[in-house]
Length: 208
Image (cartoon, rainbow, N blue to C red; front, side, top):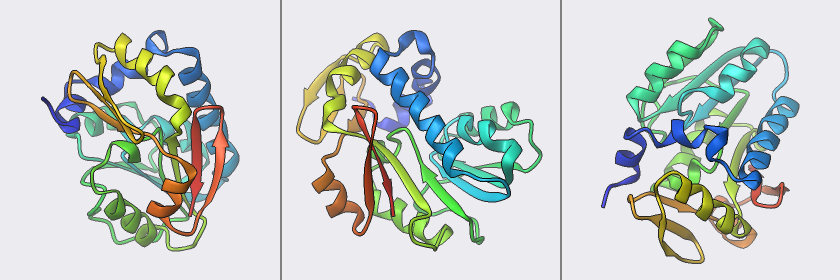
């Protein structure tokens, strides 16, 4: 069975972002996430996106950022992000999100679209986000709630990754992709002091 890293290297992200593959609940969540960012990110901010994929969030916000940095371990995605970013103040770095080779203080750090829910060292990612954006409540996660399971099962099936195993905390597909979902109580255990809000009917936004 493949790891998440191998599944992503096979191009899963780009297929998943094709609206034709997305059940309505997933499309609603992705739209709401972008609307949320547009309300939170203000002109002149310096923002880092951990697990940025192909850089779509920073590309959407680029005109209002003083600087945006995207970090992802998949070099192919970073190469694509460089190609799609038109704003000169956007930068993309191939790196593990638990050990970002940047010594800079950002106004805001994000890890979006349940990327944190696919990462093995969740505490390490949180620690790096705290280092890079040291002011409390300027770090944001968006993650799937337990109510997301039916929509994600259908989404993954359409992507050729039918779910083989379901637990109260994760789904594992036949392609080896593991994606977690969270209760509020589990988020508070993992993150610590934080604010949790529901985003559509299938996700949470966590600020800490």
